[in-house]
Image 1 (tube, rainbow, N blue to C red):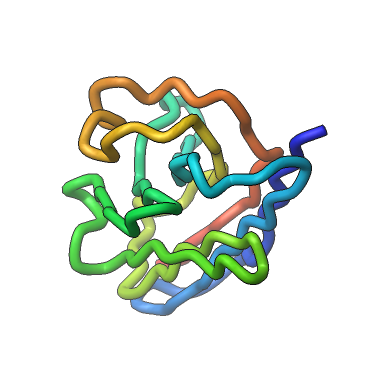
Image 2 (spheres, rainbow, N blue to C red):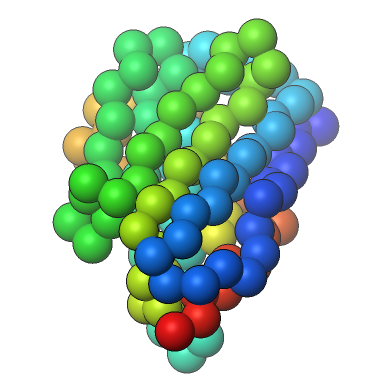
Length: 126
């Protein structure tokens, strides 16, 4: 049974940093891409970032480019999202997701993923 478990969310002041983790288990993910999405209250879920576990290719939403960094630790089967220079508009529930391998540039147009975590709350205060 595939499980994606997010952690690392919390409350920080604007300008601060957080690192989210997503521990993946239940199958081999070497032929998968991993994504981070977020959903703010009253808004639709939106793409944040994606990475290919096999190639390391990455993709970012324009709103987080230069501030967020996605990475993987293959030994730990864990995906990270390092978030710097956080803004109040980054407040949302952040979800980790996994999907069979495809070019990460396709994620923006096709954000449907096979597996999803439960989410972790990120709150940025003024």
